[in-house]
Length: 198
Image (cartoon, rainbow, N blue to C red; front, side, top):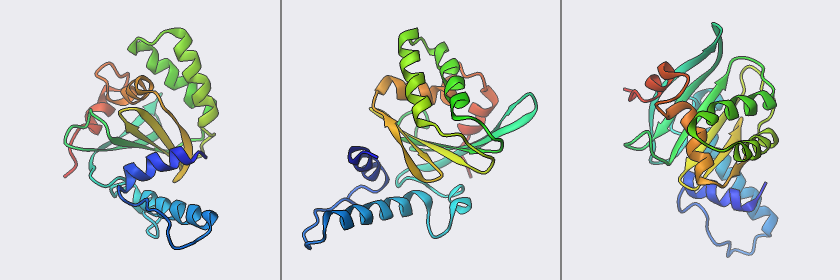
C-alpha cells in the first residue's frame, strides 16, 4: 500500500487526522496508529461491517439512496451512495455489497464494457482494464467494495482495507458513471441511488 494513497484517504475520511509525530514514537508505530484510525473511520469499528453499511463512511457526506443490481433475475449486489449536496459531483462514496461470488477479472471486464459507452478510446480502456484486474479481488457473497471518488482519482477499499487507486480524473469520472451517468445500463438503480434517503 502506498503511503501516498493512505494520505489521500486519510485526508478525505478525516481532515486534520494526520499530525506531525513529535512525541518520539518510532515511525512504524506511527504508521500503525494512522492505519488503525483510518480503519476505525472507514469501517465504523467497533460497530462492525454490517452496521457500517447504514452509516456515513466519510465525514461531510450524506447517505443518499441505495438499490439492487440484478442480472437475469439474480441479485448480484446492493449499492449505497454517499455524497454531498450534489450526488453527481465528487467527493462521494459508492459501496457495493456483493450477494454472489464473482471473479475480480469479471468485475474489471464488466466495468470496461460499461465504460466503453462514455467515449474512451480502446487503448485507454485496455490500460484501465489491466489496472482494475490488478486491483479488484475475487469477491464472495457478503464481501463489499467501496469506491471513493475524488476529482483527481478513484480509490478502492475491499472489506474496509485499501486496494489501491487509479489517479486519473477521467477514469474516476467514467468509472462512477457506470452507476451515475444518464447513459447507465441500470437506470432503475441510478434512480434509486440518486433518491435522497430520509
